Amino acid sequence: MLSSDAISLIKLLFVKDKELYVFIHRITGYYPHDIKPYKLAMVHRSNPVKAKDGHWINNERLEFLGDAVIDNVVADYLYTTFPHKHEGFLTSTRAKIVQRESLNRIGNSLHLDAHLHANTHSSAHNSYLCGNALEALVGAVYLDQGYKRCRKFIINKLIKKHFDLNNLVRTEQNFKSRLIEWTQKYRVAIEFELVDSYTDEYKNPVFRTAVILGGIHASEAEGYSKKESHQIAAKKALDRLHSDPQFREQVLASTPEIL
Image (tube, rainbow, N blue to C red; front, side, top):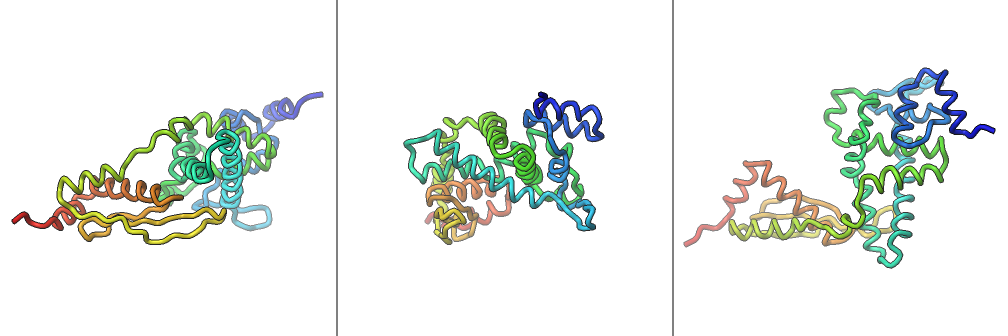
């Protein structure tokens, strides 16, 4: 009896979407049983398609599904991989993997944009286009291949291939220290102000911190600990100091004169 993969390969000889079939196989290791969810995963909301019932559809529902599946698989994988780590560590590490920047980096490396149907004008202002498409693709894999194969795809093709977990949990760039060193060098007052704290949909604590430089609001960021929110906000402040000369001059102008 032929396997489902063999049947899918035979179907490939007669389908009109050969390029997408081959692309999906290269990324996932599987030939699609049903190409429809994968085609929908590549439809951005800026350029929707009309369904048979007359409704305009895009990949946002698949994106929602894929986001939930990724969260579940990453949490399960980290729980198993690090049996002696506490909840805060697992939450922080999961956040680093599933954050928009990480998923967008992976989506770009997979060249999802080559198959994405989007309005170029709208997509030019959407920096997370490929990351959102990656979530939609995961949703399509889940519907087409089932949870077991989708989990294998996420772990082997996304996590293991694109993250060095040991390095991820060991290395943390200390942006806060760098920012403090900068303020000491230029005698600029610095404050890390807790703006808000709440719990997310998974009951994890979230902290929002603002960085104030010389009395000027520099940045805000959220994290699963106060330390993480400080680091991310400090990085944003450093990036702004380096990229925005006018802001930098405003901050430096706040420095008291030496009598």
